[in-house]
Image (spheres, rainbow, N blue to C red):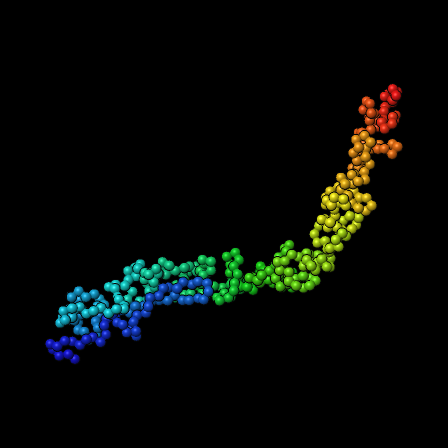
Length: 372
């Protein structure tokens, strides 16, 4: 109680916007939390208590005097006896109005949501910003979890497998043609089977593929040593896969020249296997694979080397007569001529199929031979 003519007691607490006590301080601002992949969180609402019109112990007349002296809501008026305004306490400051950024309705005593530093009432926020559920087509309200995947959104209750209808919340799933499927349904419908163990290769599992067949990574192994092949080179044989070392030991032919396995390509000559790089001319060491060659005493030669070493020489042009490729030649008294070189020495008439005469090392037609 205060006596007439005396100063009223100091109010026990300042207006709400000026209080510093941690037990009465309004909650710190928070943003609305949208649903994102990962741990799900609900939107957080902020609620501002309705303003108190007067502080305890301050008469209605004092409040009016404070208003007349120009004090803003949330401030105490100037002290008439001291002649100076009461110092504003640091900390929380309340503005004159706190309205929805869209509809301008007051948010005092109501739930609101901050978006880009602007407050919205729940109704406006849902109208302006709420996502539409992919399943039911209804807006996802502020009091619901918003589950998102690749810019698509669902209510928590609508986020389920398209086939078995089981919930996919906090569970692995796969997407196929805009449908969400649990791992079991996806595996039964779309997953491939392992060629080795015949079991389903689950989505997200690493697998190996070769010529339309699939394997679990741990099932793709060498048939001989049973070690995983992984991304290393391998050789298939009789529907079985072998690492290169095991294939060479078990199946590869050995080159008759170097005695090493032939893993790729190779040449067969007289029913014996050769590496391409080992099958060469005996004289010049040129590779013979894909080239014309001949042999003498079981040794292979390129044509040039064979002609230089073993071919008969034409008595006319002195070049070798290879005898390969259907080459025709004339032989007489241990001398040979190319067909084109078997001509009369004097008149150059071809003597192939004709009679001829010899004069020392020359051959002559019968007409030219008369003059001898």
